[in-house]
Length: 68
Image 1: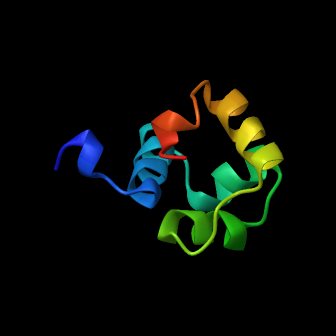
Image 2: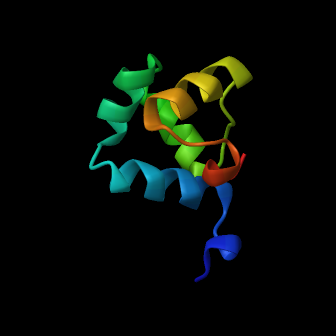
Protein backbone atom coordinates (compact mmCIF):
# COMPACT_ATOMS: atom_id res chain seq x y z
CA UNK A 1 0.00 0.00 0.00
CA UNK A 2 1.41 3.37 -0.96
CA UNK A 3 1.71 6.30 1.42
CA UNK A 4 -1.18 8.08 -0.31
CA UNK A 5 -3.47 5.08 0.19
CA UNK A 6 -2.94 4.97 3.93
CA UNK A 7 -5.75 6.30 6.08
CA UNK A 8 -5.17 8.96 8.71
CA UNK A 9 -5.21 6.42 11.51
CA UNK A 10 -2.73 4.18 9.64
CA UNK A 11 -0.36 7.12 9.16
CA UNK A 12 -0.55 8.01 12.84
CA UNK A 13 0.02 4.38 13.87
CA UNK A 14 3.02 4.05 11.55
CA UNK A 15 4.52 7.31 12.83
CA UNK A 16 4.18 6.08 16.42
CA UNK A 17 5.70 2.70 15.60
CA UNK A 18 8.64 4.31 13.75
CA UNK A 19 9.41 6.08 17.02
CA UNK A 20 9.21 2.74 18.85
CA UNK A 21 6.50 4.02 21.19
CA UNK A 22 3.55 2.21 22.68
CA UNK A 23 0.19 3.96 22.65
CA UNK A 24 0.62 4.64 26.37
CA UNK A 25 4.08 6.15 25.86
CA UNK A 26 2.91 8.33 22.98
CA UNK A 27 -0.10 9.51 24.97
CA UNK A 28 2.01 10.36 28.01
CA UNK A 29 4.51 12.27 25.88
CA UNK A 30 1.85 14.67 24.63
CA UNK A 31 -0.29 14.73 27.75
CA UNK A 32 -3.43 12.86 26.70
CA UNK A 33 -5.05 9.67 27.87
CA UNK A 34 -4.20 6.32 26.36
CA UNK A 35 -7.86 5.98 25.44
CA UNK A 36 -7.81 9.22 23.45
CA UNK A 37 -4.68 8.30 21.55
CA UNK A 38 -6.09 4.86 20.80
CA UNK A 39 -9.26 6.45 19.43
CA UNK A 40 -7.19 8.60 17.08
CA UNK A 41 -5.37 5.53 15.79
CA UNK A 42 -8.65 3.70 15.23
CA UNK A 43 -10.11 6.71 13.43
CA UNK A 44 -12.90 7.13 15.98
CA UNK A 45 -11.82 10.67 16.95
CA UNK A 46 -9.45 13.37 15.80
CA UNK A 47 -7.17 15.27 18.18
CA UNK A 48 -7.96 18.90 19.01
CA UNK A 49 -5.85 21.37 17.05
CA UNK A 50 -3.83 22.37 20.12
CA UNK A 51 -3.04 18.72 20.87
CA UNK A 52 -2.12 18.06 17.24
CA UNK A 53 0.34 20.97 17.42
CA UNK A 54 1.98 19.43 20.51
CA UNK A 55 2.15 16.04 18.81
CA UNK A 56 3.76 17.50 15.70
CA UNK A 57 6.26 19.49 17.75
CA UNK A 58 7.25 16.47 19.87
CA UNK A 59 7.59 14.20 16.83
CA UNK A 60 9.15 16.85 14.55
CA UNK A 61 6.54 16.28 11.88
CA UNK A 62 3.64 18.07 10.20
CA UNK A 63 -0.10 17.45 10.37
CA UNK A 64 -0.01 16.50 6.70
CA UNK A 65 2.55 13.76 7.34
CA UNK A 66 0.19 12.34 9.96
CA UNK A 67 -2.78 12.55 7.61
CA UNK A 68 -4.53 15.51 9.24
